Image (tube, rainbow, N blue to C red; front, top):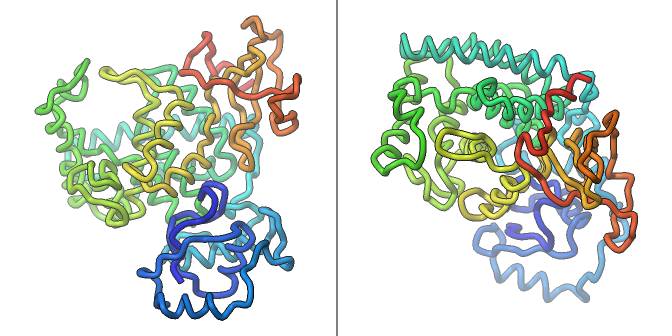
Length: 427
């Protein structure tokens, strides 16, 4: 039978993409461990509606609770194997790492944020420098050295695998600096982080890294006046800018060793699930999986970056906007899994607590995205602490009725309250 919908948000389950056909007992047990009931699409499954009704009528009673034999915990080691079986059923099996390594995605965090800080900064700077060289060659020769690009993204991939929180902090620190920020590098990082969250293997992560870096490679053939214009743009200017997709594809097709996945990312990063995107107005699953990933990471970074014609949106507000887009511009499950990747309050973003204190998000909490680890910088009078204080919100009381309960009240734009995250990153 084809499972089309669950009795709970997909965000609360390990299922990456909506819709799959049940093939074996493992998949049934995985569903039972998360759901009391599911919705079945009789038109998309191999079992006919008549057979389904016959099965239902043959049951003496309907189950009213989860089977007692199923371990009721989201940390059951067995579910990861079953989840991976589902990925195999969806034809994405080759993307997954070959074995589980103790984390939901298959990757363990192997360094602290502070311990990874210098390496994350170095990886960012190296890739930014390499990206400049990539643009120069694309402009002069109309092609990209793919072997060189693959080497350039390697330190960034390794940093993300060790601890994605560190390089996320680097990105938000650089956003505040403006001229020190490279959107191509940031988009590449978001793509790697998303792939890490989904458990993609190293080869797939490299495609995501390269594709993210080259999404706007076609801009080298657009006029600088158009790229640097300020204020609202006209329809004619928009159409001119949108031509960068085709120009980018021409550069990639002239280059050797470009994977289809990278081409899909460049071709589809402006496509939208509801058909409102460009250049081909693709819809739903007609957009390749790499294109869907490219679309959401590019959109998120554009939202949170200040440009000559658009102010930066606070990371929390950008996450809320993406959440509103699910099921429309972006596939629901892609949005949910991406928000799990970055968090509603991303690492490095400025947040204010209900008690008036202000800090910067230090580390994500995968089991409860709204309660991350925070570095407190300002007291409730908005005066700097003599030394930053670390607050792990996982250890705090959650009940709002409790007078000691603490929660994040609002996420703020980069640089709010005069806070420069980079000042604290290497301390």
